[in-house]
Image (cartoon, rainbow, N blue to C red; front, side):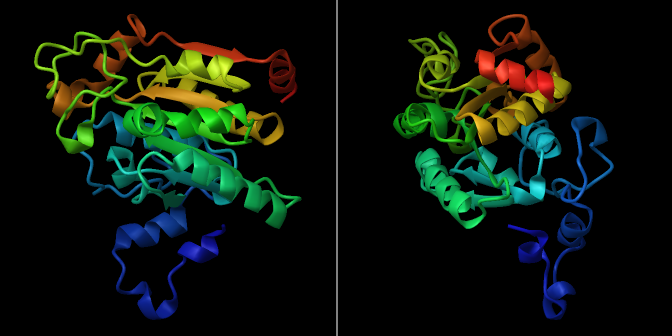
Length: 279
């Protein structure tokens, strides 16, 4: 887990697109970055395959800027929209079978703790609402029950955006979607509330319309996971393509959600609160 594994050998360097060379040369590796620094370094290629106005790609950019130790961080994901951005980002990334990302992250974290006992190697799950709340809910919860020292970040666009806009467990009740022409018939799965009672020692719910809060939540979650146990961040990343709003209105939609069903919330144990106060 170092820049050596992404640095091209001289024989092949000339064949790589310039954007990929810039990811290595100007990625967020050796200096501490923050969301305020976006635009001063290279965190993702400009021609990534996400739709215009994609909330997920914005969420990936924000979390990439917030990582405490990017070079020593392993992102574990699963198929879905997040995959397409993460494989184009300046991050150590491992894709898994759909839904088992927290199980894979558990094994990787335990292995890294043995291999590098004196270095913090952060393992962070980054996946969509389908991977975490639907098919992967069992494995997600059990990683929390076991108090695994990993961070789980849900990029919640409230829809199966990658496969045509079907309803997901995180879609809002009443939302008209493919496979839900009369509106979704049950409420959002309360994953954030479940995290509070399933072993997570820190959690935050936020939207991409509040980048500083996203950055603070991601950083806090990873630092806390190193010392205390599982942490969870849920980020609203609205999808203009399937929710049928103009691509330039993504932040407006996210800001409106903050007033309605995605109000900012943070929870932590007393021990964690004291630890963060000392940082």
